[in-house]
Image (tube, rainbow over all chains, first blue to last red; front, side, top):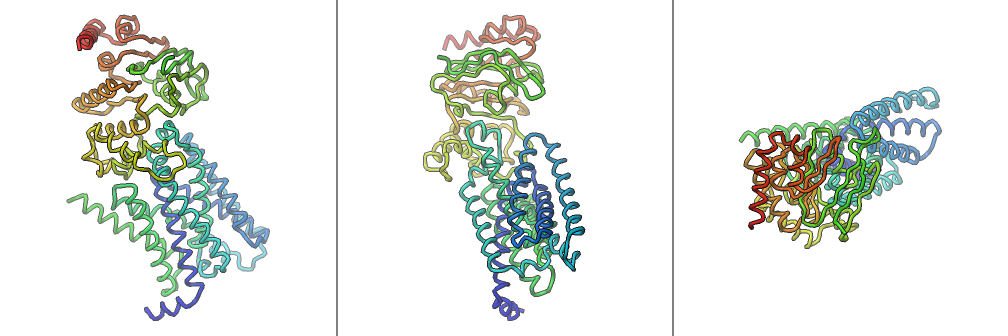
Length: 279
Length: 248
C-alpha cells in the first residue's frame, strides 16, 4: 500500500490536492473555533448554499473563473448574516434558514433550466459533494487556493487576540474601545473566502463539517482558547491529509471521506473527554 | 469640571425611550449606585454611558480628561461565556486589548498590568485554570481584573453580585469598596438596595420619577423611603455607616 501511495505522490495533481486540502482545512478550523463559540455554527452551512447558487449562475454564464462571481456574492451574504445575527437572534436565525434554502433552490433551478451541460446531475452532485474536483485542480487554481488560504491564516494569527476579545465578550470589547465592527466584518469576509475555496474540497453540503468538527473535538480536550485553536488546526490538517490519502487509495469520494474521519475523531475526543471528566 | 456629567439624558431603543430626563454629576472617587425596578432602564442607561447604545436625547459630558474608552465595564455574564474554553489569564489579558491599537500582540507592559490586576483581585493562583470551571464569585473577580486592565479611572458594574452566595457577595463588595477607596470612580447597578445604601456615596433612582442625590438625601427622600420599604430601619443602618466612615 505504501508503494502504491508513493506511486500516486509522483503525480503533481495528487500533491496539489494534499497541499490545498490541508491549507483549506486549517483555515476552516481556525474560523470554526470563533463561529462555534459565537453560536454561528450554521453560518458556514448557509453561506455554502449561497456559494452554490452563485456557482450555478456562473456556470450558466459559462464564466471561466467561477470564483470571481461566487466570492463577492458569498462575502456580501456573510456580512449581512453576521450583522443580522448581532441585533436579534431570531431574525438572524430565520434569515439564515431562508437564504440558505432559497439559494439552493434557485441554484438548482437555474442550472436545470439554462444549463447546456450533458451531464447535469453529475455537475450538481460535484458542486454539492465535491466528488473528485479536488484532484482535477489546475495549477492556477492551486495557486489561488493556496494564496487565499495562506492569507486567511496570516490574518488570523495577526488578529488572534482581537478575535478572542470579540468572541469572548463583544460588549466589553466595544466599550473598551476595540473596533468590533471592523473585526466582525473581517471575520465575515474570511468565512466567505474559506467557504468558496473549500467548495473545491468537500463540496457545498459538507463544508459545515470542516468548520465545526475540529473546533468541537478540540473543545473536548483543552480548556484554554489558545490550546483549543492550535489543537483544532492540527486535528483538521490531520483529517484532511488522512481523508485525501484514503480516498485516493480506496477510491472513495474525497469530501465525504474527510468529513467521515472528522466525525470519527470527534467521537474519540468526546469519549476521551467524558472519561477524563468522570475521573 | 465633573468627571461625568449627564444632562437630560433619554435612553432606550428604536421602539422608544425606556427612561428619560436623567441628570447627574459624578466626581473622581464617587460611588454611585443605580437602583430601580426591573425594566426601569438601568442596564440600558449603563449601555448608553458605554456608548453601546446611542442616546435618544440629552448629553453625556466627560471632564478631567476622561476619554470614552476609559470606562471599564463589568457586564452581566452571557450564555456564551458559560462554556467558553479560556484560561483566566487569557480573559484578564483581553482587557488590555483596547490599548494595543494596531499592534497584533501584547507587550511586556500589558502582561505586567494583567499580573498586577490578578494579584489585586486575589486570583493569581487561578491564572492557568479554565474560566468556566471557577465559582461564580471567582468568575466575577476575573472579569473585574479584566475591567481594571482596560482602565483604572471609572468602572461600571452591572449587578456584580447577582447569583453569588452571601459570602462571595460580601467579598465582592469589599473588593469594590477597596477599589473605590484607591480612587476608582464606581457606578454600580444593584438590586441589593441595602448594599447600595451601605456602600454608595450617591444614589440614582431610575423609574417614572428620577432621583439623584447623595446617599443621605436618598434615604430621607419620599422615593427612597418607598423603595426601601422599611425605610426607618435601613436608614438608621445607613446613617450608622456614615458615622463610622466619618470617624475613620
